Length: 397
Ligand SMILES: [Mg+2]
Image (cartoon, rainbow, N blue to C red; front, side, top):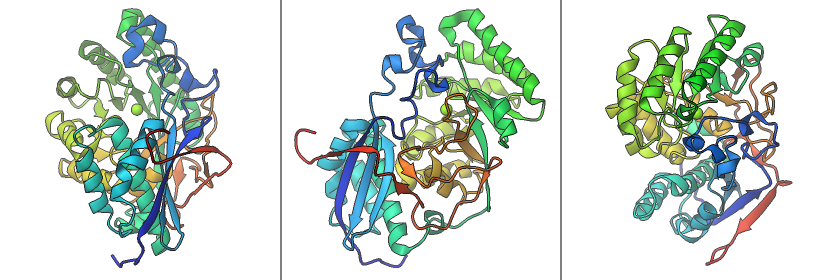
């Protein structure tokens, strides 16, 4: 890759106050705020909504990196004040003053220097946001879209399935499938299981036999329950059952996959991180599809390594949401033949941009399809009207 001759002169981290990319922080009648099965559903007082247990306490973050010549790239993740503080007080030293091209070196130093307290979670969100900002900056300096810098397109158009409460409407909007958030978990017993299956039957009747249907279980199940739900859903032609267990419970993923046979796919990885975590999901658990979030798994640099491992196992990489950051990856990969769109409109009936309103000029699928544009970097701009709180270097925020 030709050197730009540019060094990074500054890094800036912001916390997004008042919504932003955080579609969990929404009005009360938003589908994403209603009852969804979670690891906290076993506690009645935290069952009705995910905001009740604090899903929205960590706001979105924005990271900007600036080059000698004043060009700025940006990246987005979650992690709120703790992540932004780490960026400005620990990780910044591996970025500021370094040649813009040295993304691999910067990533490795950020990762190794934080292993003793990091590896996953907030630290990896922070590293991911910096990594996305670095790729965006490099593309802007080279006047190339990110997809062109990581190998070029293997297909012209991306095809999307939709996640939301109304797969029937997703079908009308042109998506190839619909993934339902599971409402009832093990604490709701057999009655809850029956209600889940009823919902699946109703939806199957509405969308017909050919439209893909899937379950998103958001880490809420145990193995006996997951097996019952899987077996009943396989009879209804469900395509996959997603993220059934606590991400640390690799043993349950392994056992569910063994019991699934060829009837339905077992998928996971939304809350997994780095090549090491995904190696376990692939090698030990044998899951059918891994679903890394590029803003959480380690950024684009790490996603490429994760994806290469998956390819060697003959498995698909279908990233979790994440708009343009996923699009630029997916369009370059043979083993990512389709991708996810999260329906963020309150009733699941409209297509809104994934980071609305934090990001301006975000492309959205038309008829379930989208062509990644040739604009440099990730091709989007920050909406400066949003309330961005700059986080300073120093002991306090
Ligand atoms: Mg999911």
